Amino acid sequence: MHRIPPSQRIGKKVDELLRQGLDGEEDVTTAIIRLGVERLAVEMYARGLSTRDIEDALREATGDRLLSRTAVSQVTEVLWEEYEAFARRDLSGFEVEYLFLDAVYESLREQGAGQEGVLCAWAICANGSKTLLHLALGNKESYDNWLEFVRDLVTRGLHPPVQVTTDGAPGLIRAVTEAFPHSLRQRCLAHKTRNVLDKVPDSARDEVKAAVQAAYYAPTREIADQIAAEVLKTYQSHYPSAMRSFLDDWEASVAYLRCPTVHHKRIRTTNLLERSFLEERRRTKVIPRFFTEKSCLKLAFASLWRASQRWQGVKMTELERQQLRLLRCELGLLVGEENVAPKAQRLAA
Picture 1 (cartoon, helix red, strand yellow):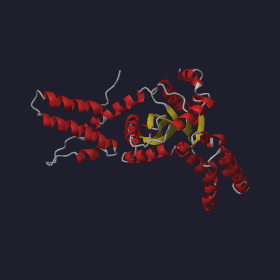
Picture 2 (tube, helix red, strand yellow):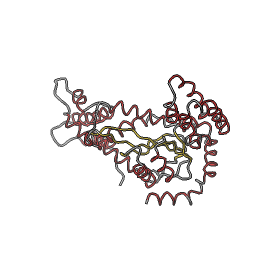
Picture 3 (spheres, helix red, strand yellow):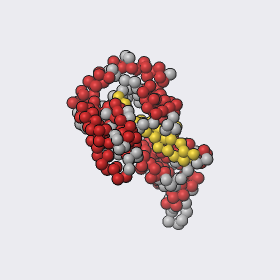
Picture 4 (tube, helix red, strand yellow):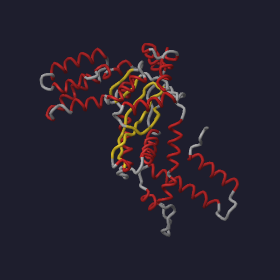
C-alpha cells in the first residue's frame, strides 16, 4: 500500500479546511494554525531542539503553552511514520553506480547507556544525484548486522553497484564481498590515512601523511604502485607498523582508479556521510542518551534525511555513463541481469 507522507497529509487537511470549513465551534483559522504549529514542532525537533525547548518556544504572548512536552512527543511520532515509509520503499528505481556504507554510534538508556550503531547506506546514481538509501540499527563491527542490512537493500530491489566504499570493519567487508562479489570494493582513504598516521610519531605525521596520500590519491594505478614502492623504501625501517597498515588491503585502496576520473574525489572516501553524521551528532547531542531504539532512529533519520536533501550531485555526462557501462562489462555486472541478479536474490532469501 502506498503511504502518504505526514507532511502531505497535513497539507491535505489544510486544503480540506479551506474548502469545506468546520462543523464544530473551532474556526478554520485556529484549526490551520494548530496544524501549522504541529508541523513546526516536528521540524524543530528534527533540527535538534529538545521537547522542553519546543514547549518553551511555542508559547502564546499570554504565556500559555501551545503544545506541552507530552503533546510535542506525540506530534513528533510523524517522524517515525516517515522513517517506516522510507525503510520500506522500493529501491529498484534507483540506478546506483556507487554505494557507500558507514555507521554512527548513539547511547541508549535502555541498554544501560550502551552504544548502538546506526547503519547507513547512500549512493551516487546514474543521473549524478546523491541519495540516502537506508538506515537501521546494528553493530558497526558485526558481520551479521551488516549482512542483514545489505540483504534488506537487495530484497527491496537494489541492483549491484559498480563500487562499494566502506571503512575497514572486517564484518562489513565480509558482508559486502558476499552481497556484491562482482562490484569493486573501495576502502575509505580518509580512514586508511588515519590508521597509518596513528602508528607514526607526531613529529613525522605531516611528512608521512603527504607521502601516503601521494600514493593513495595518484591519478593512475601504475603511478600509485610506483609511489607506494618509494614510500615503503623510505619509511619501512622507521615505521614498520605504519607501513603494514599502509599496504593493508592495497587492491581495495586503489580500486576507485578504474572508475571515471571526474568521480575519483567523490568515491574514494565516505566523507560526505561523515559530514552528515557530524550534523546528526550536533542535533542529537541535546539528548545525551536516548530512552529507546525507536527515539534514537527517529531523530537520526530526521536529521540525516534533511541533510541529504541538500547534497549536491556529481558530474555524469554521456562520457562518464559510457565509461561506467564498459566497466560494468569488465566486472560482469551487465551480464548480471542474468548472472548476478539470481545471486543477489539467493542472498536475500
